[in-house]
Length: 301
Image 1 (cartoon, rainbow, N blue to C red):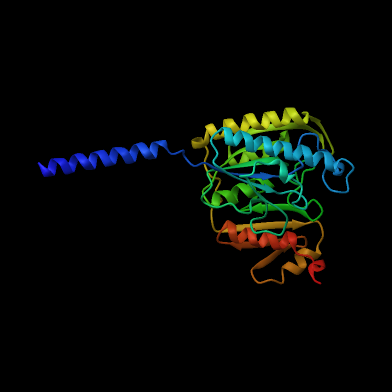
Image 2 (cartoon, rainbow, N blue to C red):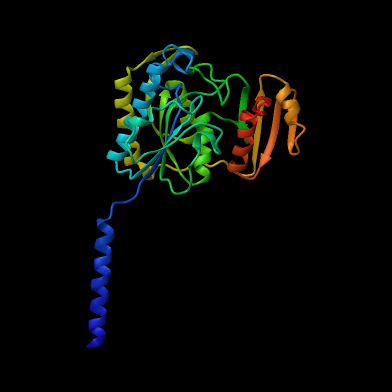
């Protein structure tokens, strides 16, 4: 009799635990990396930096697109959101316009660059306002990391966009990219490498400095719809992983950076404008690339 009562008590406790677990909301952690070239209406430097006559208006539009993504993610069940200000000086987003429970990453330098703060606890990554790579003849403001310094970036022989590079960093932690916004060229390029993720086409490229664009409100609405669709399909997406060991190839528009970097142990110089570096992980590669793109003699006092 006592044994039977003990079994009944165990069953009741187990059922109560299951009911309690079922009542607790599932955690959904989302990382949003925000660039600016892919914002609706952006076509020239006039919108992209503090010196441009339209910059203040367009940082407002950039913020609206990011807030639209945050709101949509929350409506789709996101319980924790990190937003990375990943353009220019990293101080573009109007942070007072975000919900108070959102964390925002700002300024440089920072480890993992446009993906600073990503780790294995996240469930999904969203790319907003991204652009195509430096060798894409069709994209608005197309470049890879630095339009002034770099002409090529490749991992294991595959040319990288910033989107693919950042997806590989997320993939290192087992986190999939689920959605991207930007012009048509950027979307095609990123999808070709990481798969058929959701996409919000904010504009169609007509050239490096011209586009047929949505209005800011139409773009924000479209982004919200695509974020919701992406998070509903979350289980369909897989992390983008680049097979280790990794070989990084970087080509510069000038010869001197490759000449100086080749003095470092482990850095080869296959031609006058290029370097090659090998590493065991995306984290190691990312640290090296951060030094390559950030360090200047001007940093010294």
